[in-house]
Structure formats: C-alpha cells, structure tokens
Amino acid sequence: MTSSRPTSALWRYFAGLAEYVFHAELGVVDPPLVDYVSGLLMRFVRCDTMHRVRNPTGQPLTEVAEMLAEANARIGNARRDVHRHIGDFTLFWAGVYPEMLRAKQAPESKDHFIDYCSQGKRAYLIASSIETDDERAAPADILERLSCDFDLCAYGLREVRREWERRDGESPQLLLG
Image (cartoon, rainbow, N blue to C red; front, side, top):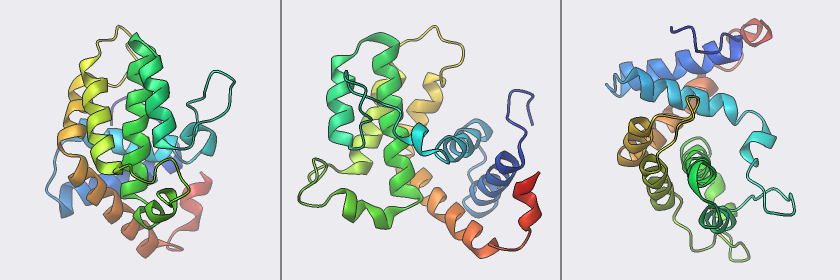
C-alpha cells in the first residue's frame, strides 16, 4: 500500500474486497484503477458526498440530468470535477445497486431517458480531457480507463457487493477499528 491511501478499517475492507474481486476473480491487475474503485466506495459511504454537486442556490443535485446541466454551466477544474462526479455517481449506482436504477429512471424523474452507463462513460471521458493543475485530482489516464472499462468496473462493483453480502457478519470487529 502506498502512504497516500487512507488507513481506516473501512478502507482496508473495501480495498481488500475490490482487490480480491478485480485481481482474483476478474483478472484485472490494475492497482491504480482498483484503488480508484475502492476510493469511490469510501467516498460514497457518506450521502453528502454522493450529493455534493449543488446548483447555484445550494440545493444538492440528485439526478444525472441536473448534474449534466450544471457541468455544462461550469468551466475548467469545476467542470472536470462535476463530470468526474457524474461518472462516479453513475458507476456507483450501475455497479453497486443496479436494482435501484429502475426507481431512479421512473417516468416522473428527469433521469427517465438517461442511460447511466453511457452517461458515465461520457462523463469520465470528458473529465479526462480537461487539464488540471490540481495534484489531488484524479489522473486523466485513470478517468479515461474508467470510461473505456466502465462496464467491467460496474460488473466488478456488483461482484464486490456480492462478496460483502456473502461475508456479512463474518468479522464484525473489522469495521470498528
């Protein structure tokens, strides 16, 4: 592990599951990509992170259609950040909780005609093409790989969820540390 990784028990749990699924089950040995997916799980544990993109009045945006409009209204790093978030948001839902997409795309939703996978791929590709000087920003090559391998990563996240559900209750002290 690199020193820039979080060291919490929850991080270790997600990282271990993601490494096991991506490396052992899927044969995807791409540590930076797997680290990104683990970090996505960590970030989205908190609902405020999941809904961190806000409109000009400060209201959280909860639908991809709204986030796309907000991304188009921004420039530079802010635009890159919103597109990256759209990629993360769509990857999370399509991967970890695909059964929720039906509700998110209900007829009364602005996302009714949004294809989460297509929009996620597109958002990551756009984010990867916007240059940034922020050292903390996700590297463009990772975002580009997420765009190209979106379906594989979504499948991997479904397998991560299946694995954590399989292990549910095995070691409850793990998350308390």
